[in-house]
Image 1 (cartoon, rainbow, N blue to C red):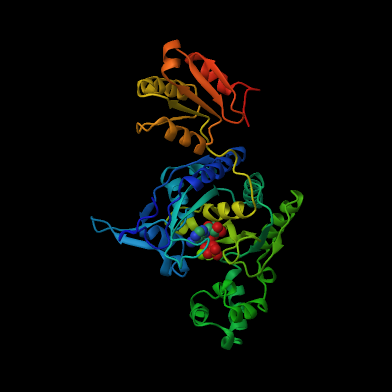
Image 2 (image 1 turned 90 degrees about the vertical axis):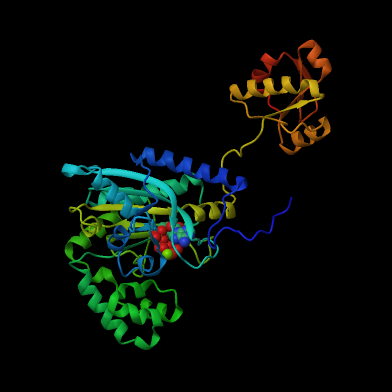
Length: 428
Ligand code: ATP
Ligand code: MG
């Protein structure tokens, strides 16, 4: 059956992750979970929708996300709720609400799941996408920043990604950013004519955002702009130096980029991204940094934090492009076929027995003939086929066929699970 043309389709910008891909996702999440555990992070599951205010205050009113990308609606009780566009604000809310960082405690948490942004859909950019998110809360020292960057690099190393570049910057803090902002304003004021319509609007609201404008003319103006490193206050400068020397100590190479500012207002000090050479325009597989003022922005106490979010959809895309391994694809080991109708119940019992022993087994439940079953067995790439017919029924045996070389053995049903899993007995 080909695809069916129906009036109801998945909304624009969202997609189905189908069997050909879902097992790859499971591999990436599993590998991530192992690395997270090795770095002492605990997994949490957080709500997919939150009070709208969490994001308008925690992400920032002048960001693209809050200005034009949120899925916001009133629920039936008239409350404004929003599908989470990112995970950090929810993570900080959850840590505060559940007292995970009470009395100076720190927490390293991670989660993964869907995020929602109303963006222009294109390759590697969707309206429902998925992030792997990690946050270290309650630590203000640069050691935490280094650990976070190291963790994200380690995940990608384990996944086998090549061609990744770490791009690093500092976005300062409320002490030094206003000074830098002035210098930036003066610079762009003199080059107004080169700026796009959107950036002209950003002049008043958030001139730092002009730095990451994709428009070539704005880009040229941004390239010539003053660098924030020259405006950092002593505390931010020391922090930045410590992050850099920490990365160097771990042999993690990086490139400085004064134009890396990130779209989120609550970022302070460290900002970084990991870029892939194999993704085209949507080249960021991961972005992160420090956000020491987020907690206060959402009405909490002072709670420093640093973390990252990796784009799962893009990670899988790059891995496919680079021919990375996703571990073993799910496969049927044994196909159990009935040669006659009378054998169908014996097939059921043997299939059940195999699965009980943790052997991936498949059978026909649609009462199809033997030929059709053997076709399915071939298509499933099963290593073994068990055949039960009148003769086998009479002797209480099963014919076990090695699908690679066609050799056969006659076995008691009880012996089949061990036989098809024994070392040195593996076809292929
Ligand atoms: P970009 O510059 O590509 O828009 P961003 O700065 O908006 O990314 P973050 O908010 O830092 O992204 O999110 C972290 C990661 O999530 C990104 O590096 C990217 O891999 C992924 N991501 C962000 N938006 C999308 C999207 N719409 N579709 C797929 N992946 C996304
Ligand atoms: Mg974006």
